[in-house]
Image (cartoon, rainbow, N blue to C red):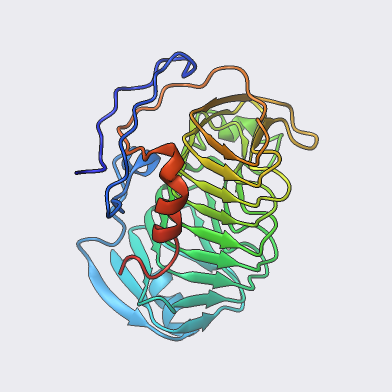
Length: 312
């Protein structure tokens, strides 16, 4: 039985909408879903050439090339600074051991970028930074033990999907919108889907949202999150739908630090030894169809499918 279901658009308030769920199939679909399908869609380097790289110099040269291209990463590449990824690129790891270490990837003023199947560790800034960019898909990566953000999206970026990633041994996980004072750029942008990610004992920002509306957080597994799960702030609108929260005292809330509380709608989340969360307000309608697993089965689906080694 197919796990994929077609969904009607959510009602304008999202509070009045009725969830539609299908049980997970034996093999989950790893196809692109969510905001990354919008704004013209995300295809990365599809249709271009392919290059395999195994050292930093070759990787940097390929990443900055203006050619439509798939870059296959083999082995461990240690970067000495953040490396810019140009438009129309797919960066994908070979097997389960491909690793980016030392510093991360900067998707800046770019469009149509896919980052998949990579280990990120010991980064000195962000593992993946997205700014002034659209049509980005960040999928099936494993990220652990870095300095700042694991996956940060900011500065008017839009139409991004973050899916099937595993984050562990880390504090600041996923930031969406970097400043309370950046509304002039960010209003009407920062529309991101987060689905089927595994937050394994991480601390905060899963995600922490400013201005984006609607932001869609669905079918993620939160296992032992120590500070909080999702925070909606500064005019944001976040739909937190059918996630599995386990041993997470504060699954979601409005406001964070000095940032004002914003809109958050929570629907059909599965709680195990977790708090009830704080919600309120309304969220704009979701414009795409998407798959929705049985909420109580999300843990199993995500643990078996998230991280490296599942796509290639």
